Image 1 (tube, one colour):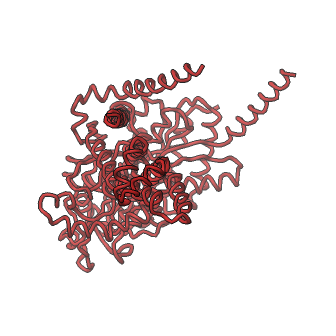
Image 2 (cartoon, one colour):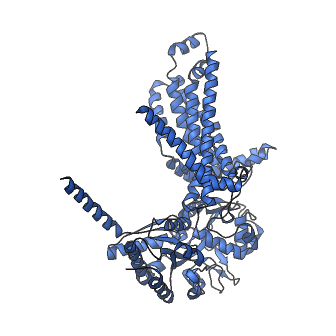
Image 3 (tube, chains in turn yellow, cyan):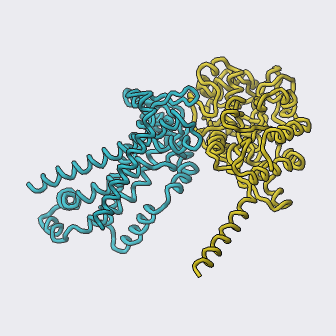
Length: 337
Length: 296
């Protein structure tokens, strides 16, 4: 009798684990969360396999994959080839997008203000404190700028969006590079810290005089007023899929070891200066081969069939030649059954 | 059996302290005493200091106590001495409900309703009035952004209010009516009765309630994180953004690299542990002194 119950219990347990194994687990960047959630939804309808993705930030995603609590980690701050080798991880880009500065200033709408990299860096360093500062006025001769204090809103958690944003500021301002630097979380000279892209979006939406930075989809979904930028070529650009695409087209993925590539401040008249790719981290020799295979199946599906959904959310799908390259990397580097 | 259970509590306490200290050791070894006085917090440069977080924790708790305790005691006095009996129960129940609200709700209220009020009204008013006074003006400087130490302290004040009130009201009710009636009988005013009879009689309970409130103010995490601005710097102005130990840990722990970053966060946790311990010990000491004084 006892044996029977035990057997029954084991069977139940076994069926529970096998059902759970069909769900792919991942954690990390909040930047691509809107598109991953969309893909997961469609994928579940088509194949029945679910994806459990927790958008906890890039830094946390790297930590989770290293702790092996998830099948894949997601980060917007790529790991260097050396770090990948040390951890036994493979890295590949999944999708690209743009980071936009967003403002909340009495009556200002999207595309009504323009900033350049140096001014943006000066604001985030606290050198420019009010909206009617001459540096901002010079870039916006037609705008009526109030004397409102600028409420700088940045990420409080470790973030790939921060990494790409600070990378751009460092390229635009030597001062930023020296004093603050480039990282997933930096020692912010001024400002208000918020958690996640959604946290920054929320705080900007609620704070008069706010200036923050979020992934484009968050700006759009939250109806925030984004700012146009002067790019490396000295031209004013609006954040559009075309502008992200132009910047992304410069990328030379084939010659980037571990696909380590940062797309900020690219050349080209129409390049959006804060374009970024987001990456997936997986073990080359996964402990749970079945889960790893399931995840690769999902990513393969996303590359092939998810492009329209990505575009609909203003992400830029990886070009076909890069997808081929990535699939070759999978075959070569990631153990599959 | 019960003795063993009591030992388990002690072992747990020691275990928490020791494991925190061991985890924090690399940070203490690397930065030494400088960890306590430096307000640098720079993950990319691996420079960490606890001063800003300690300062924010203590300052917000002090602001909360300065406002929460007198108001809370006042409500308790009103409820037990002055309130019409018909109102006593509804107000009492409302206070208890306030104590039961999860802190995240206070956080949401703080960031969506209270913070804009601070930015639009209270902070500009403070900056333009108190900000112009020499010496203390420096406390009220800076742009009105809404987020900051004062906002966090005020939200905390609202959060601890029900603790102070609920406990003080309960102990005020234990005062034997004959004592109060005797005082009223010789012509004492309500104020005198509260000051000379009720408070001395109940001070142990009242201080217990205040300490409980202080404990909540020191350790509160989410509500503070929402409104304090999360900036690891020390500013003279109490309107400026700051951070607290628990806010810092909540924001950074999930993605801290193993090594100095994680060790520094654990060190912050250890410091909070010690601060709470000191506060409780001080409260005990104070109570003990009051007891001996009362006996004399």
